[in-house]
Image (cartoon, rainbow, N blue to C red):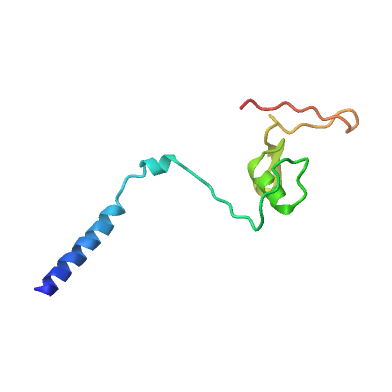
Length: 101
């Protein structure tokens, strides 16, 4: 009789695991996304003008975007700028237009 209950329990467990994998991807967890970062030391600042340590520079790099960014193949593409601009005034002047957010 115990063997019958073991088989029934095992079958129920396997069926539960199988059905759990058939859930919809449109659950409430699918809408919420998060990203966790662990650093080796405490974050001292996120102010780019005051950052002097590697942890702060890494966090600033991970959370802020510059005028340009590097895409696949080391190609420079626009970030906060609308487009990559060419220098004027013999290479002394760059005029940027920021993209609308």
